[in-house]
Amino acid sequence: MASPLERKIKITGPVVVTANRVADGAVIYRDADGGWTTRLDAAAVATNAASARALIAEANADDLRAVGPYIAPVELTASGGRRPGNLRELIRLSGPTIDLPVSFGI
Figure 1: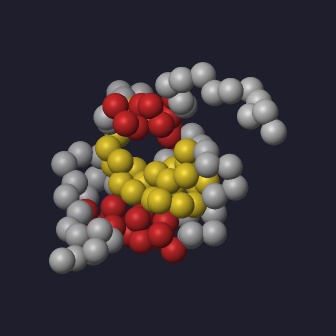
Figure 2 (figure 1 turned 90 degrees about the vertical axis):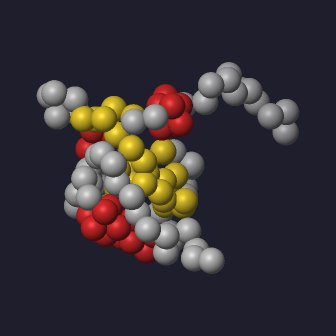
């Protein structure tokens, strides 16, 4: 059985590479310069398997700044912007769906 990193990448539309920042868990996206951004509209977009594979390989190599990178679908707007392509990514971009406690009582 192939590992998840070795599986074939199937692209059916535009995608980005997303992960969580190691320092604070924030949602981040791989940008075209090989760095990370918290802005979806600044993320590098791949439209074929080869470019998606390159983005995810670079992201996996950057394990000191990001954890758990994966390929996520996006929708491109007429003005060139990006919107989450599924409910999971919409929730990740918007933040928690419940109110978090202010204090943990420690």
